[in-house]
Length: 284
Length: 284
Image (cartoon, rainbow over all chains, first blue to last red; front, side, top):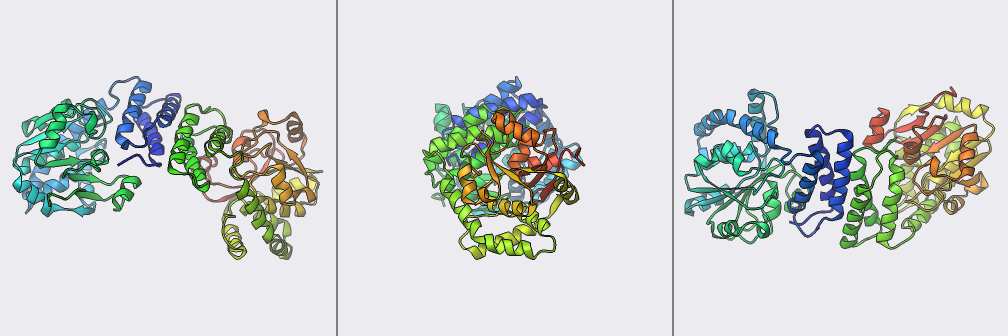
């Protein structure tokens, strides 16, 4: 999907929120807002929002004077989520359909605030996230796709969420290649982050070769593009990957929370609901 | 008051809304959004929002290819409001305190959607606006100020609202100088617009000499600045005038609707309520 007229003001909010997370001074925040104005003035409205967001987060990193502003937050998110791993594993194994449970956990992993103080609070966050309604739930098609596939290309999203991805991958019982960003962008998963979450123990970690908070195929490495084209089944996590792949011709199972009005209108599905489904269902 | 970090995204919304009002094409709307990015990149955060908005509306006019994008809308708003004049006059005269009634009408004149279809609907809009709660109502101080003053400087705001200003001025029973913008900006009142509303029949129309949607004293003409300094009583209409004059030392009676979170937080008063009061009450 392309940029919507409402995306630029969301860019401004992201700049201010990120600056706040980084404890930037007021004058630094204004520098970010003005820098964001510059990014907006050069936006390409025919590209998906995550591709335009690369310039936004480059600017934020530059103004904040740090190469990877989310480095510490990513480490903390992963550590927090890992501390829940044994409990989540028990819950999944205790469910009558452990794959369904793992899928629901994986979806809600995208929603959690990993910054909260205690593991008890984090477990409560998980419970809350699990209560989020799926406005699309193509579980039968997912099972069918899974039964037929030799291996799966799994497109990662954020840190913390990675631990939930690992739990799902352990239930898939198929070889998995887990795709990570080509470099740090926001709190998105890089190779280092994926290893922190133990994903190398359950999947082969592969890089997209590009550092957008989404999958911008034409900017990815040839190796990744070939992987994407040849993968018999693709699971894509998170809204950023959806925004960049929604117009792609191939069959993809998207798992994400509908987090903004623009995507909600695009899908004609309610805001703040969960999505498990395809936009191209030719694999039926 | 200065720019708040939330103001730039409001600038974007204003650009999109205005472009929509002008029936701009999608590509023209994107030009406006990018132009707004340019404006944001050069914003002066130490100035009030209406002063920064001058560059915004200049850009909008340039992209839309019209000098005064709101010309037609202003004429229609004034004509619509004028059609209500006799009925509003009857209501004010029928009230036990006609000055209080005229003040309430003047406040609600700021809120009405003059673009609606029939005079009947417009009257219903007035009734609805009249029901809006005042979170500040310094009526006694207003009466005291009025009783002592020789004349009043009345700072105008939007077209349509001008007719409600006229009704209030008719109840003040003091000589009034009615200040208008030095040139067209948004739907703010210019000299031509003020005459359209018949304000020249009840007040002397004076220009601020500057074309901001607020009173930026240091940019106004010497003549206006002297008038402002010497006026024994100042009545200021609308949020834009408040934003630019809130830090001024002199006593001013502000009448406006609190239309945004930034002003609501600045005043610590609820959003979408009416304000009649002063920020400097030294005149007691």
